[in-house]
Length: 157
Image (tube, rainbow, N blue to C red; front, side, top):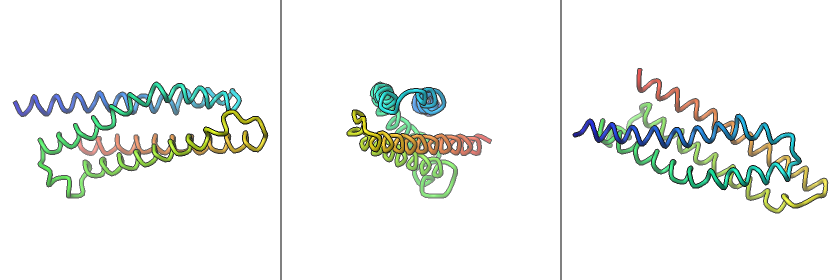
């Protein structure tokens, strides 16, 4: 029974990670670069529509990732394992950094709201600057994703 419990947790963990990481990589590697041909305000409208569809998925996937990850650690090693320095603890720390970076992205998008309908040069320049910041934060998250995958490699080797 214990093995079935851990297997189900692992399966749910992988599905949630696939949804979260896959959607993030699609956004950063495919969608955002393709939007560079549009005017900043039009590109922002497309981003907003995409993120409106993506947010409910992320809102479910992230807690599932944390919950199933912690329950797997408890089932396999016990909660005391989280208090030591090991790849699982480092994965959890990197995940917290990813959430913080997501918060920065959300804050940046909130700053873009009043600039979306502006047509003056200063507002469009500010919008473009904020879009660059958003892109940098998204690429930082890609780097953190790679780091998590490296930590997974350490765990499974």
